[in-house]
Length: 87
Length: 174
Image 1 (cartoon, one colour):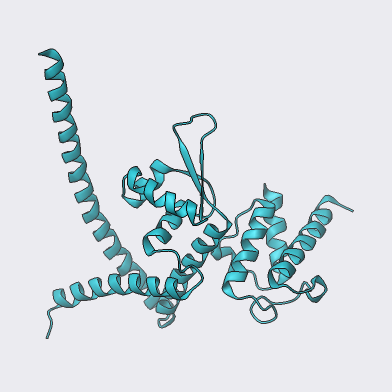
Image 2: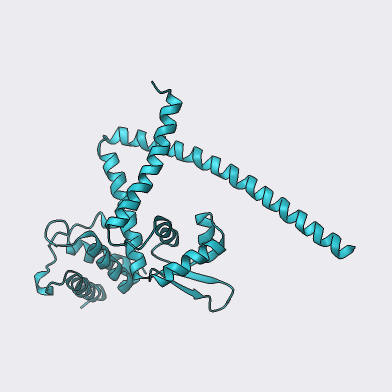
């Protein structure tokens, strides 16, 4: 498995784990294509809790302007992979 | 009928007061009831990412480090701010936001973004650009006025310091 695949798999695992802890739902209920606006029961406080946890886990910055582009769980994984790879 | 100057003047004061009031009410109704507006602005000045020095943060807020120290004492106690001395230079104190502090700061930014989004939503692209240009001009003008007072205050402070130093020197000489 290439390094980039390893990184993506690790990010996916972490993102889904943090999301399931924040929302108090099982990780099995979260799939990549779920939409933040319609499919995931985040209120704004939980959303930022999730974002800050991801930022702290990967030591990256996810400002609101960037989050505006994130529509699905998969988009979030892509952004985290991209920012982590740039470090 | 009010003159244009009166309309502008009243609107400016009202916008300022109502934004602050709305922000205050949203704080009271939300998750961070134990924070005052001034405290929230202190968190915003520190920012959600890198640690900052007390001196730089005080400068950004336009307050003395003494005043900031009192505010930071309270915010540390409430669990919003983490404070530590620089490992190499013990005179430097660095402050950063805790997880809860970051959360409050991000929620407050969102409040401002949502407010701005709703104001802009009523306009088409051309009008939005025009509105933003005009608002930026007003912002720059008011900023300019503020700098004038800042610099005159600096001149006065420098003059006071020079007078003090001269008196000291005279005493030492005499």
